[in-house]
Length: 282
Image 1: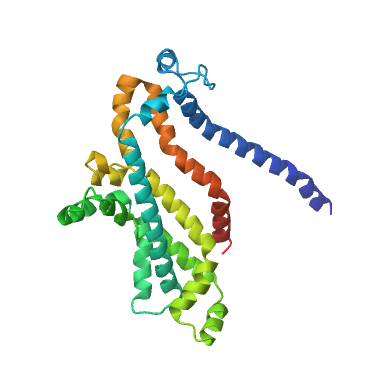
Image 2 (image 1 turned 90 degrees about the horizontal axis):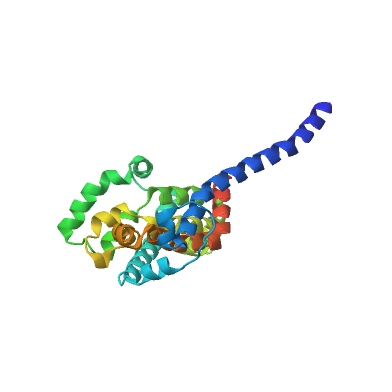
């Protein structure tokens, strides 16, 4: 009894210590982010003298207005939105169909193909840039939304996530539907897919965030200014801003590119937490 009592007394202190450590780590991570936001709200004349301080005094929105006056910025935002939405929808379709096939269907070479899919998790995306660039160049598809979207649709982690989710669904649900003469696609569409909504939401959010923040492949594939995504486009003007406009404009471009991602995460963070927690308990 005394040992149990000691453990019960020590646990609250341990929990508080862990909480304090997590708060300190979160504060350390937020300091650079806050510093970037503050610098984006300061006049460049002030930043030329000193970049210290975590208060936007004096305050100005001139850096953001200068950025929005660049005529190509709205077009870059539209390109990023098209690529991110298309990639998210196609990834969800491919991953859910492939995951259901691996989890429930029997076909020749199923185990070997699934092993190859898992092996794709170990291949760095930079390793396939040259074959992808050559392939799309031969097809004449560079500087198109298709070239910016298609290489990232078949995501191994998405197939693996959906396969594991569908394997955890009791087979009795499908058997009950099959007794009512439901086809395989009907079972997938009306039973399995609604049940997988948390996993699909998590996968869709991570895919959208990755597509919006992607820089390397759009940098390789999009060589015309009109086809730049927002990450490539803002990077292309940062050098000019740093030389002519100042450091504040560079920080404003970083905040501008990150703001949609932050808003999406704040809105859907509960779904991300729920999906990750669900996946860790299966």
